[in-house]
Amino acid sequence: MDALLDLLNSRPLVNGEEQDALGDPAEGRRWAREHGGEGSLAELTLLRTTRDILRDIVCGESSPTALSPLLEGVRQVPEITSAGLQWVVETPPHARLAVEVVLAWAATEKQLPGRLRPCANEECRLFLLDRSRANRARWCSMAVCGNRAKARRHYERTR
Image (cartoon, rainbow, N blue to C red; front, side):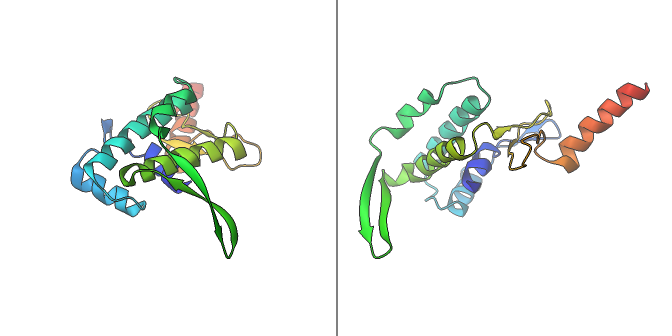
C-alpha cells in the first residue's frame, strides 16, 4: 500500500512547479529500487503510465478498465508452502512493481472503498488514504494543506 501512495504522490507541485520523482532516470531508478523494483528504463516507463492511469481513476476521470492493458499476460499461480497456500504473481520482471501497485490499488478499493482520494486543496496534487473512523479526511497533510485551507477561510470570513 505504501508503494501505491508513493507512486500516486511521485509528481507533486513544489512552489507551483511540478516535480517528478520518476522523470530523471537516476532518480527514477533510485525510487524504483527503494520500492523493490529493478530500476530499468522499461520499468520506469511502465510506472509512469501506471501512475497516470491510477491518478485519472482515483480522480474519477477514467474507468478502472483503463488498467486492462497493464495486466495483459499477468497470472496468479497457486503455490503450496509449509505455511499453506499462497498466490504468486507471474509477470515480466520490468512489470512486476507496476502490477503490484495495481493490485494494491484493487485491494484498497475492496477493503477501504472511497478512502483513496486526492487532497481537497486545489493547488495540491497529492493523494491521501483516509483511515479515519468518520471517513472525513480532506487533506494530504493537516500541517500544510489543511492549515492553508483553514487560514484562507478565516481570511475570507474576516475580510
